[in-house]
Image (tube, rainbow, N blue to C red; front, top):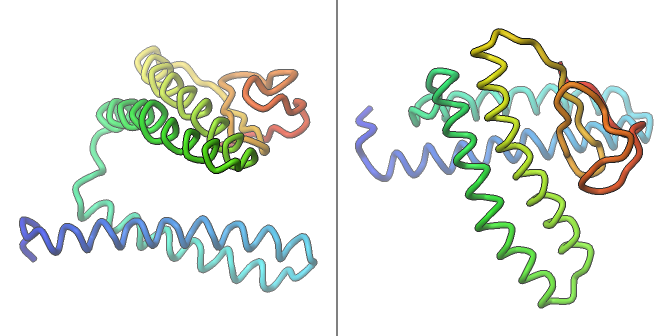
Length: 168
């Protein structure tokens, strides 16, 4: 396959986005099925979500997006910074203009968390070079990621420490 072909590259990118979105959507559906006590349906949603994640990974690999860890951290830092500074600011402005306070709040949280992600990538590179281990905790309300310890209150959305979960 000739990856220089713009149409194929575009198709790989669209397939990656679709598969990644499907994986996330199905994981959310699995949580809902678990809440409604449909364990077998939840397991199916999780299984298909994993399958979709494999498809997304394969497309990402074909796009040449997976590099060495140091480059991946650098690229991720740049991407998070751009998303926080450009995209979410536009989204917040539009939601406020539309009078949709809930969307504006969600976009604001996401923007603030994206800024934190960028800082975490920088610290991760420092941890990696110093051969230090750390533990990450995520706020289940807004997605804030804490490095090393759980804050008493989420600095982005104000949720209590009990909503944080450890990521391994």
